[in-house]
Amino acid sequence: MRRIGRSVVGIAQQTGGILVLLGKIVRRFFPPDIDYYELKRNLHKMGNRSLPIIALTSVFVGAIMVVQASAYVQQFSATAFVGWGAGYVILRELGPILIALMFSGRVGANNTAELGTMVVTEQIDGLRSLAIDPISYLIVPRFLGMITMLFVLTVFGNLVALCGAALFGQLTLGIEWRVFFHGITELLKPWDVYVGLIKSLVFGLIIALSSCYFGLAVRGGAPGVGRAVNASVVASAVGIFVSDYFMTFLLD
Image 1 (cartoon, rainbow, N blue to C red):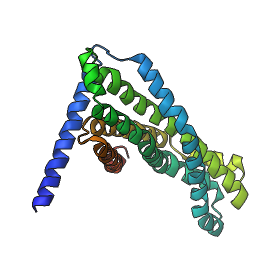
Image 2 (cartoon, rainbow, N blue to C red):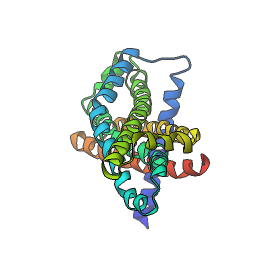
Image 3 (tube, rainbow, N blue to C red):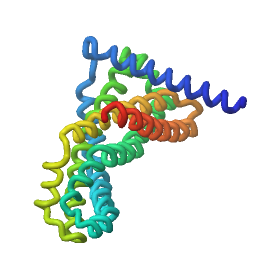
Image 4 (cartoon, helix red, strand yellow):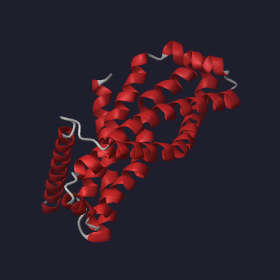
């Protein structure tokens, strides 16, 4: 019971710390206090370098969708619904979640490690001694960069996944591209697309806050950086699934 109590208190403290960090970030927007050079650098680092892994993952996500559906499609001759089914699952649920998890494991973990190393080597204290606000200089650009690039990567990954599904659908089931995308455009509702994009923004917010908070909260030297990276990835993954659960009900 004592261990459970300590865990609950620890989670409450971390949640409170993340909310405090969010408040500090929001304050930097009134008036805007953002280092735009750092923002541009982070957008490039987080986005361009993530494209290959997102593209590779998304292609096989689309392929898996077709492989799983192939038996039912052949049994019921439901080729017209393959595009709709793949589009619904990829655009609304599977695409945003998997891309967010990949983004968290690559970009979020790297961000936590960078900030943690700066804390351990006292670079954060050095910025303060030079009258440079670490939140404005380091955190806000990373916060905006992660939210923006996860949204962009989700759009990109969804398109690649749909193309992958269409390609494998043609190769394995003989479904023409025209039939596949006709099912998407005719049967899929625009709101289904918007739901997935809204989720990507929320997931980006969660990953950004978790990675920045645990990076700044590093204690205990180099081993502390490793623990912070692990905690950041776990917290982001839990936050993604919990928020997805509630958004599925609220945005239905």
